[in-house]
Length: 322
Length: 165
Image: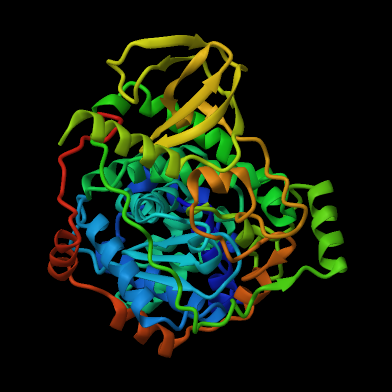
């Protein structure tokens, strides 16, 4: 599970199930009993459900940040992303790719094949191989169903899935999203991110690109870390790109010599006719103070009235699906 | 092609690709420095963790590094670049890292900029029009393959790094 997907679910949950009683009110121990295989209870979610959840989350995210108004750019990113996705075990998902109009450096994977990358991240890339690596990382999350895996570990989610045995699919979707938020707000294991990095490298190589595009992007992110307040926060609460480089390097070292060198085509630029991201605005002094305060007092995540705990600022923290 | 001419061409290409100013990097883990960007090339020297050198070129995943013990090649994941000193302005364009990895000007600075924050997302509602656009931009598997192959990309069989997958 990606923490950015966590973030997405968190905000989607607010929008969708705000004020409704969710799993927090259920006595999960009584429902499932100790030792019951919770994962089994969650397997009611098939691929169609996965896509429905992802579509809802993607559509709401587009409500926050629309696609960059550059059809040629969007077609280009879809061509690259679809080609990389075709190198996976899930080549026939309804893969969608989009560049969204935000200056934040981020990328998102929602279940079922929805991948969005911010213009802020896109514009620090300088080769198609780097783009392939970034998209490959997100694709890796979706192919491995990291989000679903976390749902399956969660008793709350399992409760949602069991409720979802009701025939109404939208009811299922709402419950998956709603009950997902609480567990997703708690921080997730880093292994999914490290795994997605390794997958991204391999998928790019399979698609004929240099396998090292993602490594280069991680270098860029790692070097930016100390500079940007919002990225500093991101790095504080998630694996630092340097740590990801270390993990990826350890995995790559024994294989690097055997990997194909691949191609590094130039990346398409955003059309000059498109104005800068609408969301590109300086952080007000107040906002900067708030970030510092948040940093100074980590971890308190009081449950809201809806029973959903939201991780403040978590949306900004995701890089490559984190 | 005449080997001499080829050498000259390669040197010219390397010179063109070399950063305008050398970027100092630090070894994250010990690594041999190879005479060429191949693991079967001869070893120039063995660099220990914490050693440093100047990046004078890049080729695929390899960096060309100038060190006190000699000049050679190593995989980029073995080193770390220092934090950029952007001074709050254009983060990518002026940086030495940008000169290594990015011949292209990075036009968007994110220093002091935030976008798409939690409030934006909380207040967002499903945008059917944008979703329609996202659907319209999607490419079929076949079309993506045709266009990728036309761009010179061919699929390669590569196992996952972790054989268990």
